[in-house]
Image 1 (cartoon, rainbow, N blue to C red):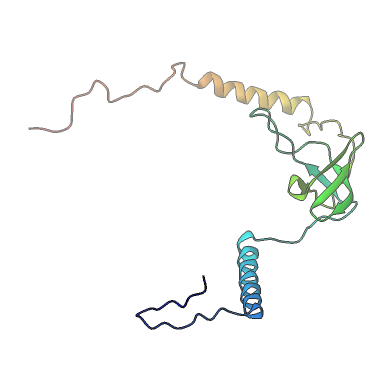
Image 2 (spheres, helix red, strand yellow):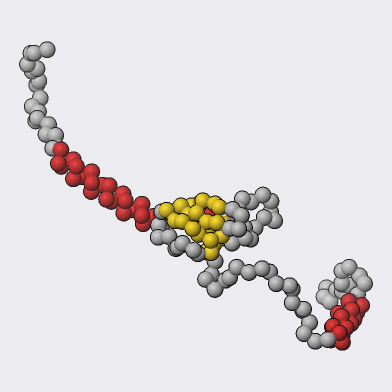
Length: 158
């Protein structure tokens, strides 16, 4: 509008920060935010390597579902936190938090036949069974124990 504004109060001209000062303050703030974010998230490097044996997490369908699949997978490729693993008939790609590292001394093998529980012969088995049966017979046939102080007079005198 071209005319000079007359004010009754004295005022100072506003000084705006320059571009380098703004950039310096912005980068310092971003460094501080990154430091706190890294400290808070407890980020850590990946513990997996190619050819490791892992268990893959599975979806929980009911309360009897185990958290991980029973069949182990072998890692074939790692790209950051993305892991590709293969089993006998399946290839899956998931983030690293969906895998659990198996101990290195564990080997892939077929399950063996269950071992015989009793080392001794038939006589020891019969002896143990008879002891268990004797204990069961000696138990009182009542569901709850008898309360002996049920029908007795109290011990105190007035």
